[in-house]
Image (cartoon, rainbow, N blue to C red; front, side, top):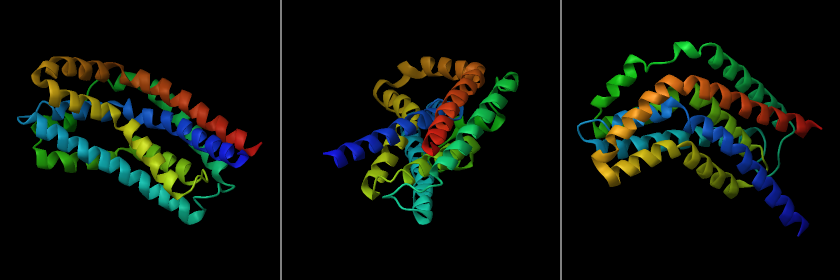
Length: 229
């Protein structure tokens, strides 16, 4: 029973650590706004669905790479000694990035020109574009690295590690999953609310992201320091 409790404690700790990391991606305007724009194309339903598929595949691929990479330098069944130092580095980086977002928040009130062109996506281009956005976005890449290392260094075993990856991708992709599936069901009735959401995100996202990054950075940093104790 003691072993079972220990495994359950580790599993719960991993899921608790992954949730805030996933929320950084989920609440990012660069996750939500492109999905909304995909729903304002000539064929919104198929374009939205293929965009969703590409986004989830891109996230899953990134996290998988770093889960495997952490397994190559350690073991998925036993947490390595350097895992706490990685968490400290990640936590500190998140805090610094959050401070930077706060200091530059007045420069982030409008979508870049390339994003506005996404309203011309086709279903075929949408899946490729979404996967590319997941890979080339530095914030998404950094968080996926952190999540992959958190999973791969937790020592929870191979099968639970891949279940944890699915859990992370589901939360990280939730703000794309929900509007796309809601639009598939409700259609044009959601067009105006989604447009208002996009406009609000453009004006407020920097302040929100700064706060989220700092809070999550402190949590990750604390866990890393606690692991060294």
